[in-house]
Amino acid sequence: MRDGMNSRTLLDAAKSCILASSPVFRRQQFLIRCVGGSTDQRDMQALRSLEVDSQSIIRAITPALDPTRHKGQAGNIAVIGGCREYTGAPYFSAISALKIGADLSHVFCTTDAAPVIKSYSPELIVHPVLEESYNVGEEHKSSIASKVLAEVDKWLERFDCLVVGPGLGRDPFLLDCVSEIMRHARQSNIPIVIDGDGLFLVTNNLELVSGYALAVLTPNVNEYKRLVQKVLSSEVNDIDAPQQLLSLSQTDWWCYYPKERKF
Image 1 (cartoon, rainbow, N blue to C red):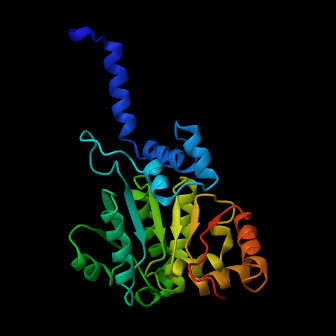
Image 2: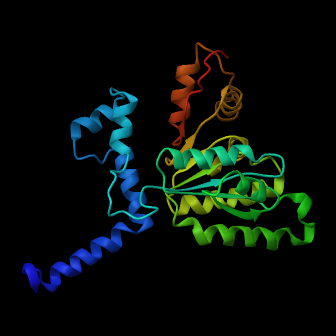
Image 3: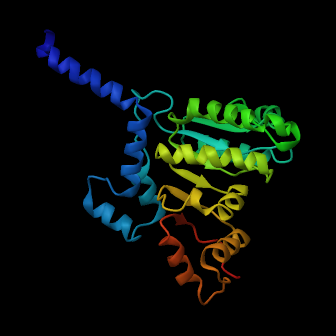
């Protein structure tokens, strides 16, 4: 072979290219970076002990820019949310992912919300697949729910992360469909960030996140209070807040502490 390359070398190179383009492989590398797979053990020890600033953390987990990469290798994100009343939140979540470096950003929303969200930006990939109760007859709910799940499943393995809840609303049928989407995401070990009405959903259905360490919850003060009341059966106060947060973290899923600390 030319330049000393043999068939074995070419085969290994081809395998590497295929593997690098695999969504599952990218997701594994993302998780390794996030939970401690850096080659610099001192850096990762500092990350674990929170002894570094936010810039150092971001440097450790952000994929390096490389001209050989193709679109999607720096992040393929899906936002599950957006209904007739709320179209701004899913837009801001999805566009923010693009602004901080993700290559592709999808929004899975209701059919009513899709034209509005799409009109905000041509950069977003909008899927009008979700439905609310007022659009679905009782006799059609089962078939529509199956169709919604099938549409999302076609894309699910491509995503590095799901963001569930921005502009989702609280329609019972819609929440049931999103619950099934979350269960399928768990089966594929896809990280899930839960915000907005997604927190309402999981507060009333704790099994969706219980035992799943790749779930990240982002509550505001009131959402955090409801979460503590549901999980710990206690009220939030300044004195007990640190211990309550620790107790939540020991339930096998993650939770961000609210920015506002006055309860």
